[in-house]
Image (cartoon, rainbow, N blue to C red; front, side, top):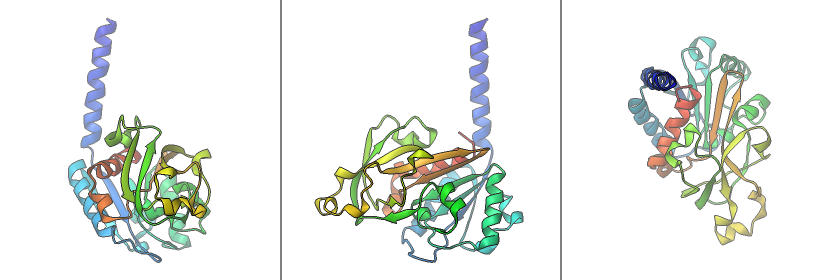
Length: 249
């Protein structure tokens, strides 16, 4: 009898998983910039468009912050901040976005999402940390702390991943308030960088997530260069992130 029950539970689990993946989710990608503008944004938007086709998303991309109204936002399951910089939302738009997240929705911060809205404390908590500085973009090693999490599927079983990007350090270490999935191996950066202490954190988180009430938020440092968004593992990682904050996996 126990064996039959287990088989039934397994079948139901597979069925519900398939239903969840078939359900379309509405994803808003926001990439408005006031400060530095990354030349990786167009490639990132193309990556998101490709992911939408592969993963059954309905994708909307905008840099128009005037659209951050309750009526517009309520149509989405997830908002992705793709390399926005500086003060991109006014006070009312901020309140509207706070209400959106309070409704159990999802947020994904990609790379320069940490270089955004420094005077908005709520946003700093949502994203997990604010950008402080970075060494010159270069090849370095990311050390994984948890590849069993659904967002880390392309790195499952890997201890580390070496790639070229811009490695942010942050105004404060977010580890005490977020679930860290990966950190920077600071010793893997070049010799010139090693001599400059201003970017060092010691314990240097790069990828993390939070669950607050019924909402989920995620930050990943990848995405300074166009090549980052062409990396199949990073592309799949971001796809898994969006699905996770939308509660699909």
